[in-house]
Length: 429
Ligand code: GCU
Image (cartoon, rainbow, N blue to C red):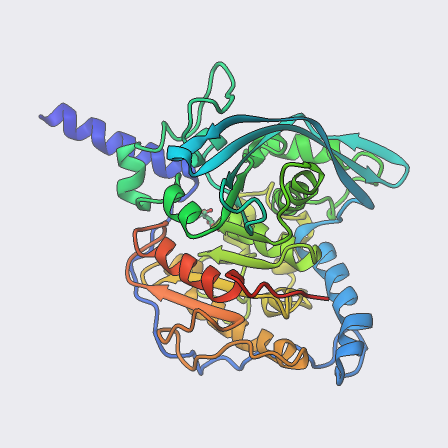
């Protein structure tokens, strides 16, 4: 009995460490908007550039300046050019999930150019489930903590011989701690609601490990001088979402034109970065993205920049850690959200996930709102954290509980998707 208890405890601790979620905070998020810290002004002066007074000024000068600043201070220098080559693509099951969808598998390799040097990622795989009754269904692009074969459990999905991962969709302990949908989303429900699913496992090209992750990032950025602005894994995984779009658009059997980046936590950060830099991404579901994602650094609760950059030195440019030490960060995360306007964003949160700082994410959404207004659309349509509006372009969802993807989350995500993507698909410019 004692041995069983010890084994269970040991697995619990190793799971937390393996998934990198070693800190679980038990304080409660305050459900009122945090009045103690002023709402940041997204249109105010920046870098010697006067206040933004028009949409054209935002698009022509402020947005590009912010993208450059996020690379310099937070995520690292992006490639000068990047494309993906589809090495092979085939349907591996025409009647997957009880005939609901066709399952595709493609082998991809991305080219990443820095200066005059063309670098190539390792070959990585993409799996996609396209509803049989809607070949042009909007595609939810997913990256999860777990490999593709956990995200879409199907025996036809290729996996390495020594396949690691999360131990299959049914892995009890992982689900117990991080929720029913931590590895595998509710696939049939998503397909039945008229959405396609595509997934890659980003560790196939930049491993989520300090040494191997940093080595892969350095190899991929060959051609630019090494230094504190070398890109981090969050940026490279962000490119992963764009590579999925590139690949899906090259596959003749798939006629999708709408793409939504979905990610939880570290991949919630990457999903925001992807959308902020790639206009082909039509919407974002960024769940519990926290520091370096949707939460403001100003007035930060929970994880600090020093915490995140020391625990995960491969996620960001080294300049992020330096700027934090010297209080030199001229930008904050409301500006990242604003770069996604006017496209819809769902920010998922949980009251006891204070490590991710839901209040900070709400204040960031309040700050980004002015750019949605500039586009003539309503952004945030709630005064408080708890009054969720799934149809708002900047939609802030908070539920009880802790860090993870639990049974309430996907129904909320689907409600948001239906409000923005069902039938009346919107075009962005
Ligand atoms: C850690 C990390 C967070 C991250 C989370 C996750 O807790 O500190 O920044 O979001 O892992 O990816 O689950």
